[in-house]
Length: 132
Image (cartoon, rainbow, N blue to C red; front, side, top):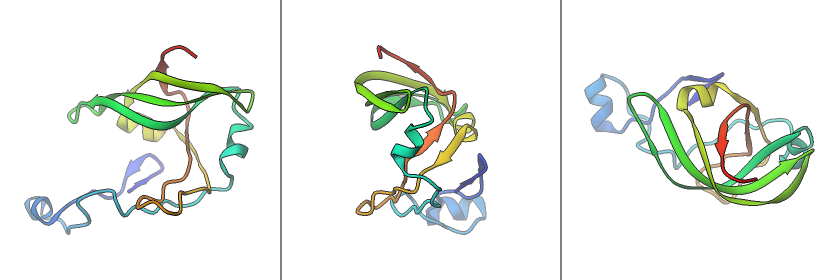
């Protein structure tokens, strides 16, 4: 769907595909398979001086006209390559296009029993607020 931070395809059901004069693809992300990266999650952590490992997205909002979004997240605070402690009530705010452009690494660890085989993704310079 996205290659090098650039959208290459879209989720289009038959209704919207016909309106846009395009071929239908899928109406949702439930059957995505990501390309695999080189390293697994813990090896990716090893290079982090400071970061947030997000394990759950909570409620939030998104502006489809501008791409700006803000989401509550849960996860773990990572420092010097080690998980330090759990975090919750953290907010992540970014722009969808800029966020995907800041994709720094894709892991090789997709959840094998999920309908969306997404591996660990590492993004650079994403704005977070909350208490670490």
